[in-house]
Length: 308
Image (cartoon, rainbow, N blue to C red; front, top):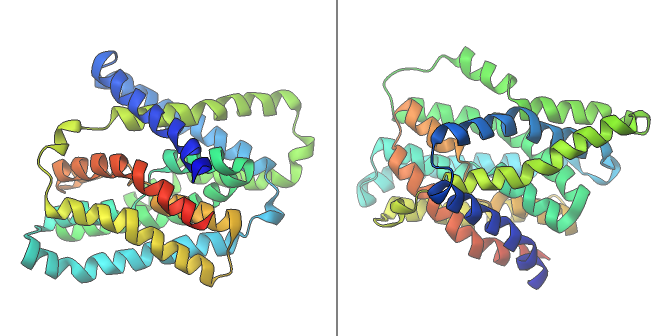
């Protein structure tokens, strides 16, 4: 438990620092948008290429790790859709609000997951979390767009644009390049490795600062039942599902711990952007993200210590 908390403390301190920087030093949105683009298209892909190209993939159960998280996402999606009528009847959850609950229960904050996996389990943890990204990102994007199109807006999405956006995702391309370079790692020139490694090492800290900058503390004032349900589904039910499925598939030790890490992080900050663009309940989405990030500082150590 102490080791887990020690690994998580720097992660959440960086998030708090990002919040403080946004509030008191860099308040203009344009600066953070620029940083996010550099991170999204350059620095974070460099981390994925570097970690996967140098990983000992013989120690990475790709199918079991990816399969566990895929099944977990599908089960959580099915659960959310199954309880939607109950939420509408007994909690008063509107259709746009349901889309925010769905995103909050299924999507995951990549930067937090990779930072924690790297702090706790080193290069192997980064490689495992990268495999999780390849498995989850296309499915989660498609599901989120479908739910928003079905319940939040009368306009049907152009699925060709959705597929194109998934195919153009730099994270997926970076993972593919890293895996392709893995057998050739010994022949990669030292300066090229040093360059990519320097970019990659900078990405996690910057990503966590950006997560903190996106928090909206004002959303903590008026919580509602839908928000609390979304937090419970993401921070409690999703990890329980993923750990149970992983154990059923024979995963243990570091492999199972990284599964738990990826499943127990808060939802992605991109969820807010998507909710705003497609007619979802964006204020509720912001509230869910803020609460989940705060609560994850308490729930993640418990989840990870239970399987350590």
